[in-house]
Amino acid sequence: MGRLFGTDGVRGVANADLTAELALGLSVAAAHVLAEAGTFAGHRATAVVGRDPRASGEFLEAAVVAGLASAGVDVLRVGVLPTPAVAYLTGALGADLGVMLSASHNAMPDNGIKFFARGGHKLADELEDRIEAVYDEHRTGAPWDRPTGAGVGRVSDYTEGFEKYVAHLIGALPNRIEGLKVVLDEAHGAAAYVSPEAFARAGAEIITIGAEPDGLNINDGCGSTHLALLKQAVVEHGADFGIAHDGDADRCLAVDASGAEVDGDQILAVLAMAMREAGQLRENTVVGTVMSNLGFKLAMEAEGIQVVQTGVGDRYVLESMKEHGYALGGEQSGHVIILDHATTGDGTLTGLLLAARVAATGRSLAELAGVMQRLPQVLINVPDVDKSRVGTSGELAAAVGEAERELGATGRVLLRPSGTEPLVRVMVEAADIEQARAVAGRLADVVKSALG
Image 1 (tube, rainbow, N blue to C red):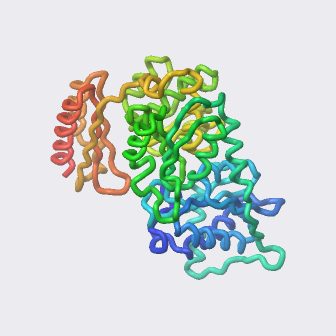
Image 2: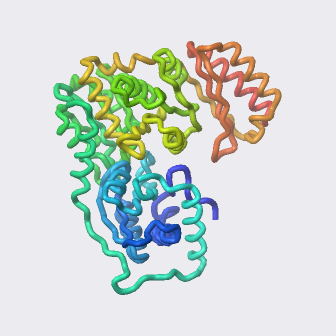
Image 3: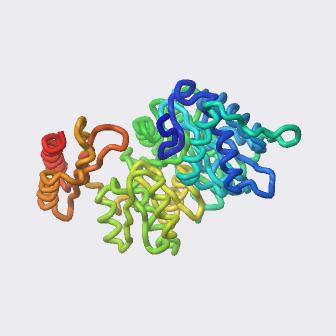
């Protein structure tokens, strides 16, 4: 069996790859592994379980709840809430485990399971590996040690979760956002009710799109991966800006009053400036990834803010933040982590803080985002090559060196082997898009000849 856990939990086509049996088995395994690790020592274990609106989440939730309760864990069902809400409630309620059922920005047929440890933090890799090993061992016939009688878990609905999470979001705001007209695209996802409630309660006039989830329409032509409808709505309504989430609302992208996209790098830049001004940007540092636009790094350096770069993936951003005590980090895709208020990316929180900055400064989102200029970026995927030799090919190293000399300080080259496919990603940034295309094309040719 290949490794089930990816960088963001277990995902696959619901009822094909991710079955009720798998969901139940992983939940039982998680309960046993955490018990063995001492997480439940001295008290009766409790888990928080939430989901996004996907139809498959209904049966998968039932399977997860059954698995946990059968292993002696009391379950609090919080229903349809964003991933960051489940993480927050896991910590706020003192639960031993959190479980979120979602495939984030993926299409509706997919679903996923993500586990959170006590405090709302992602499970350590070694615990995920142990859960998978224990699941596989029992899947092939080893019997479970099952509680009986009063030892089985009890299941209840925690309907207060919605209100508790909204209050948490409002409590994180440095100021009210009255006077702003904001369009919210909820991707027919997990934040369809939470996000409008929070923005309205904070004082904004809101227009919502993509806020009618029916279990089948999540991420369908809307949300942070499809911004066309939001751009159109912002312009039509004369809004100050728009906010887009993905299916589980751990991402936030924005659109300014003209309909221009404001990506995760620009949002990070705006929030970094605000947090520095408030004395909250610890070590005067913001964390990005190697895929952050060079314009972001140059803008932050010009403002005297240090940028630490990690591998691609919000998990690596979070690891760096926790290790060094940084307060802000994120990705171009809109995963923004504000560690003083959240243990994971929180799209609604990010959008609210962005709105608070606009309201506090009286400046437009376009003006605030203008602190950085995105350099043109070209990405070429080169398939069917030996990606393992990216770091050892002399021919490739020479070509990269020549390209870097040509681009100078206002350009950048990044070669990345794919983690899942036999291909190499060639990324080039330059002050001029034509130069970026030309350099990327030449490097792609060298990758083919040197590694093919």
